[in-house]
Image (cartoon, rainbow, N blue to C red; front, top):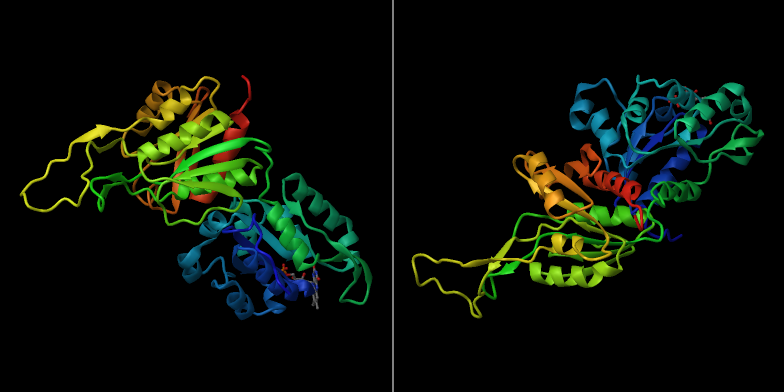
Length: 404
Ligand SMILES: Cc1cc2nc3c(=O)[nH]c(=O)nc-3n(C[C@H](O)[C@H](O)[C@H](O)COP(=O)(O)O)c2cc1C
């Protein structure tokens, strides 16, 4: 059986909670499907779950160490409950036993899975699996209602023959259905039908045919923003400087090298865009006269004359009827002051400012953003860039009012 890659699951971090139900064996197939769909999977096995399936199965299938202990110094040092909670783009508990559903409804934090569910900002879903009497019990139904009211997603259950010999509601959904529902968690629809233009990565400013001036931007933030915009339903064009990253699914990518190339690509497409998000680290200056041939080392010193590059962000923001414009400001000092000044000077609709350094910003997996607009500042605390990108897209969607 061929399992197709899933556009929404690509590169997603799915934390799978496997709990004490006879359906735990089906979670092995679920790990396989999620991974084939493109997700990275980590498994948390509850105490009950470990009575039905072995840690080794899930470690081998997920390709990651299995997580089960909360109050264990070794486990906490390797990847603790808070790190797991932050790592997850979605937490899916499948199978979810009646006991775990009750514990989540109570907000318990006395085992690893319950603690992660409390600590995560990612969407949480449960796929109930239990005997039909346990399912129908008012306690179970009350607990699930509470969870749904708090925004927990519920996948299933299905009706049919049960392992206990009874028949009725309470069977866990099939792995293929749970995989599909998990993928749907990433579709927000907040930008449905909108055209979003994004710049990402560094630019390269030629010194001679072999050398260039550039910067340490990896492009990760911009690519994550492009993916989040697609998940929100937008049609996305990504104008990218040179990066080592794969194009996110359903994103149209235009490759450029220099700031001038990026300026031309952005200005030619901006009039057709509803939203412009400039995450690229564009060189402010370029060599004024790049050498036509390789520069030889026949002098002790070499002076490069630099000239200002065009300002892509300011030029897009100045377009009559231009798109809603969002800038990025990477700063090493006076973050708030510099970002506020850039918002006003370039007449942007919004600016996302980030501190560079200390494991954040350029070349890093994580970032933290201060997002400014006319109404003030919103802090998005340190998190993986994929999660921050989704939060930023949600903010942009909230503030975007066509025609106003
Ligand atoms: C053979 C067997 C099958 C079980 N199947 C289920 C089940 O499908 N769903 C359920 O909610 N509990 C089931 N239970 C009960 C749970 O395993 C028990 O409540 C356990 O404490 C749950 O552990 P957990 O909190 O780690 O999920 C079963 C118990 C046994 C002995």
